[in-house]
Amino acid sequence: MHHAATTGRPGAGPALAVSLVLVAIVCGFTALCYAELASMIPIAGSAYTYTYATMGELIAWIIGWDLILEYAVSNMAVSVGFAAHMVATFSWFGWHPTLRWITPAYLPGGLTDLQGGVLYAPGWHFGFNVPAFLIVMLLTVVLVRGIRESAETNNVMVLLKIAAILAFVFVGMRFIHPANYHPFAPQGWPGVLTGGSIIFFTYIGFDSVSTAAEEARNPQRDLPIGIIATLIVCTLLYIAVAVVLTGIVPWQTLIDDAAPVVNSMSKLAGTTKSALLHWTELAVLFGAMMGMISSLLVFQLGQARVWFSMSRDGLLPTMFSRVHPRFRTPATATWIAGFLVGIPGGILDIGTLSDLSNIGTLFAFVLVSIGVVILRCKQPERRRGFRAPGGIAAPVLSVVFCVLLMSGLPILTWLRFFVWLIIGLTVYMLYSRHRSEFSPKSQPQRGGSV
Image (tube, rainbow, N blue to C red; front, side, top):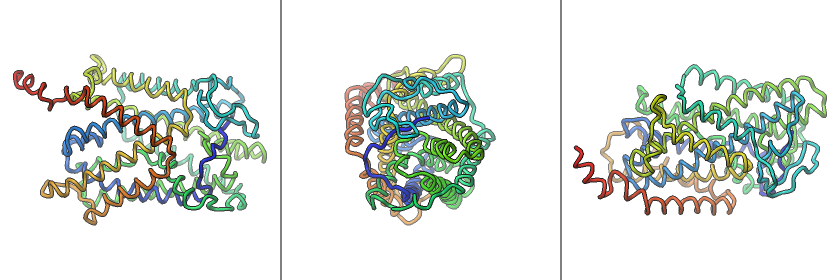
């Protein structure tokens, strides 16, 4: 098993636990904004659906284009993480595949083995992360054939993930070295902020709780409880993992590692010869991979649905809204999403991907929060099944904290993000606005067909 070397940017160190609390606060404010926006729309949907119905086509396009980045890049990162855990599983059973077929082609921090030996220098090399590509394509086939979300199956997945986390925490506690906690915040506040910007990736998807606004019996009471309870439980679990993880190994060894928990356990098991750690590692590997499979399924499904909705509204070509004649799924969009995620997942490293996913998600959160303020001013009389408490405090604080976290991301990530937005606006100006259902060219056609 292998992990990437340090890339040199500031990290939170053991203060990662503080970063997690900061991110939870940001997500709490943003989730309240999502809940209010979702309660204004009588159908379930994503941020694209909400903004299209409330703030118009251009803002909806920007959010939809941003969601394409968020969903695609986050799944690329998850696929890389899954591959790292799959390789660790192979290693646990004594099989070590050829290195070039289990590592991405781009490694900005290089690659070292668990003993610190250099395997690849920083930069590009000849390689392709085959496990990352294969898991995405396998799940794409499943989604094209159709899959029905089951609450019971989802509950089982959640329990497996929680069991894996608790197993690591309780076993790992026995091997904590207090010296690893000093210094607690080696980079000070900039490190804590950067840590929050990076670790924000782990909270992506929490906003799905807010889409239940129309289904709640008492949304004004139930939604804040559901959102806050979800964030508290997740944050406590994350903090427990962070405290134990930075206690059993030096925090510098964790940077840019796609499977830090299992790699740390493997290294520790090798030095301590602990059978308990050895078998706990296998349990954690199984639980983690099950969790990542469920995450990949949800986000690949969501990505195809966003493309389907944008195509149906005329903002993307009609091929994205084609439905399979037999399986009745958006097959074309699903296949394109599969290749769009699978190929870069085989080429890029997890650090590059998670940064792009984070800035895309934070930007979407900023737009949603601003949208709540705008609608409070322009449509104060509109029915809301849920209203974020504290006036405009929640959306304003959401914007402030999201921008704060975005400021902790590298300049290169910002440049890549602006390039993505410029490409999106160019596509909108040259294609989408002329073919949308509200364009002047579409109106006569619609009128004549009625």
